[in-house]
Length: 203
Image 1: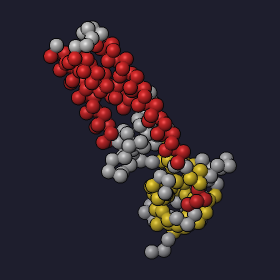
Image 2 (image 1 turned 120 degrees about the horizontal axis):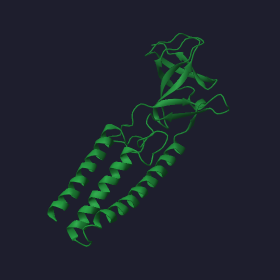
Image 3 (image 1 turned 45 degrees about the vertical axis):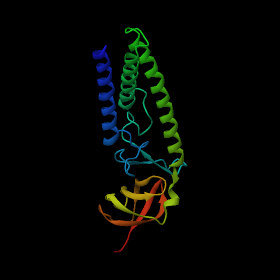
Image 4 (image 1 turned 180 degrees about the horizontal axis):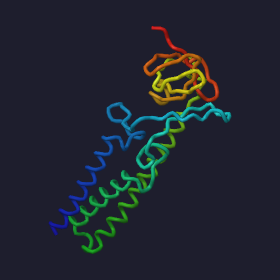
């Protein structure tokens, strides 16, 4: 019995460590912030303008984790959470000897599935709420300052990094009548065709 308990305990520890590693390395970004920093990887500004929508979005780079376009039911974090819950329930049931040994994995799997499903639903709700509060209109950024990350030339779009109240540091499409290189500090003077119109700020 002790050996079986040890197996369940190892399963709990291993999956818990994997879940923690994923959280620290950025797999939980967008829902969980560590130390006030967004660990979810780079944000990509999605240009939704040009069709009557002047709304900027950040779109995460990995939909299979707790970030991006949503949480996938069979993503690694969800699977790791299931493994941790399964091991925990198995450890408890084997230690207490409340069930026949052959029923322990079945009951542990069922309970782990239920708890993991609840966690999944909770995270989906948190993600939806986060998305609803992080939309912003591009015209609201007029007057703000940013930094060019992809060079801009007349007739050629580039990219500007802007600090927004809604989502912090955000990459958005930029156009200009000037030639701007990476690192140039700019001011947003308007919105045109779903992109920010920027001008170089004189040092």
